[in-house]
Length: 310
Image 1: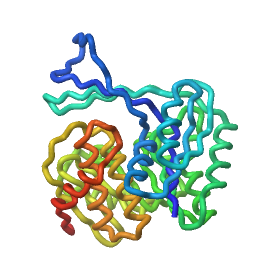
Image 2: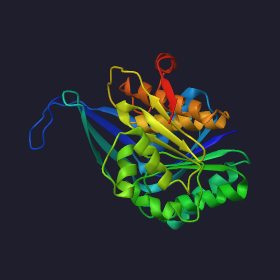
Image 3: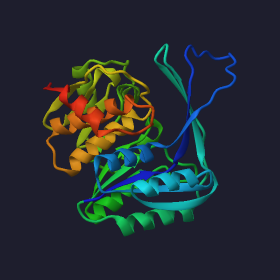
Image 4: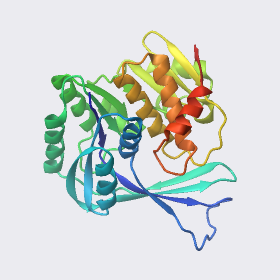
């Protein structure tokens, strides 16, 4: 079984670590850390580190995309569609003193109808019955708003399973006529989608998740340091994550999604899916590299992870 991951708009992530960061101030002499990123790239990277058979699909700008191609082709199978324009840059400002992270995301290139057709041709050529396809991240300029719903319909036709992790803006068109095996909002996104005040009460989040369940068979809701909740049609589970030294939480949600997909591909029970998902999110936060885990960190976190049924 192969897990196919879509990253419509890959990026070069630049991280500035500035304690006490405040808008309007000058911070000369900064040396950013640079990583290949984008939600789907992060998911594919972690899946490759877990040992999954994974294939990454992405629109790759003809300027600045060399780093994405070089790293990811060394990690997993890739099917890139070369497009005109520059690969976007995402700036992350990590304030270790306050624990806050500020993210500035560029728009990236614009794709054409022919580019989109080429992506779907690559997907159709690669997907086999029983595979998993993950639609992850924002929708690139020029692509149809319902591109993820179209991917779902292709998966349905080809006998593959489809998962979705996109922002609230892209959800309405992505959910139209579709049914995903897994969705992964964080608690802020879930509450914003329903117009509810933010909460980290696990029982309340499980209740809210059930309100948006019909297009999903399972919903994974991450809660940062408070762990996460997995809701299925029959049950709900809460993960209590161990305290660890956090370097950066950037990419932790993507790492969690990768863990859930890996568990799904291996037929794991829901509680074990949640356990691995949350462990991957925590393990990512323990390192500077965005969207990356090590087996040593995973083993440590898994040993101290508690799962309860709600």
